[in-house]
Length: 145
Image (cartoon, rainbow, N blue to C red):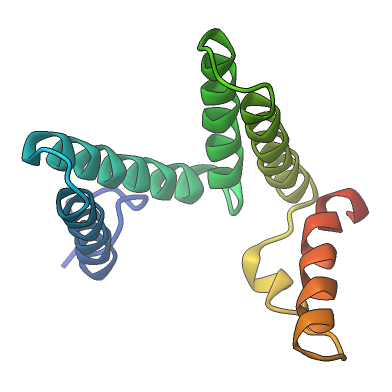
């Protein structure tokens, strides 16, 4: 029987997982002392953002969520510059958002999917040196495509 939902809409298991993560976010905020209305609002926005990124990823392609997330972080960093925050806060946001944006654009441009990337970021060495090498390889990947 054909489904009445669009093909980009997540399946039931994905939707349930997104809702459970939203409940976890809201519950964590509530336990940390936020008001119930604030916790519910943030949880709803979190679930909405997850569904939007899943939809964008299904429509545009793999790593489109990185482009969206990078753009949102850059907008947030731009907003933080209008506040009386330390200079390094918007700088860190711009660096993080810029990396996500470049990473997503490069992967989309070259047609590289997550299945193709897999997990090749395992390197020889101890726990710390292997982790550091894997992290450097992942951060440098959009510039090596």
